View (cartoon, helix red, strand yellow):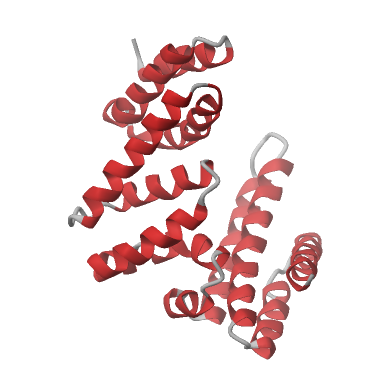
Length: 233
């Protein structure tokens, strides 16, 4: 039986209410799927959301997911410099609706293993910003202007690649723009949170102006404007 077959069977068990069967399938896939095929990593991350969904109906599943998280957290604090394990912690916390746990854990990791924590800074950044620790975020965040310029370059490159694909590219296009807007808005939030309002305004204008495609530029401007209004309110 392949890993994908096991995943499909566990998904069916989830939807059909066979809770323990679903849990055992999720645990197996989470622990072993990448041994069969490293390309299954994205599905493995997606599975965490299904696992959390199962946990809402079957508390034993939630306990098992929290145990996975605790084991990974303990190993990293003991010196296991494994970025993928840190990613796992962040994703589990996000699916459990507890990004505050990521923020608190990152601070503990920074105290225990500063060099490794620095490697994980950008992974932890959303949780740090959500916790409104703008001083820590500014310390860990790359310089705003080069970062935004690189993000804009990547966005235009990805949009150009999407246009070459034979099928509808609208969902992917929207996802790429949303990612860009989110990353830029995080930078703006940190600048504004530290009182650097003029820099925030300059970086926002830059983030829009760097985009050459008029339609993409309009969407970026609208997205940033919407998020800026939400931040102010």
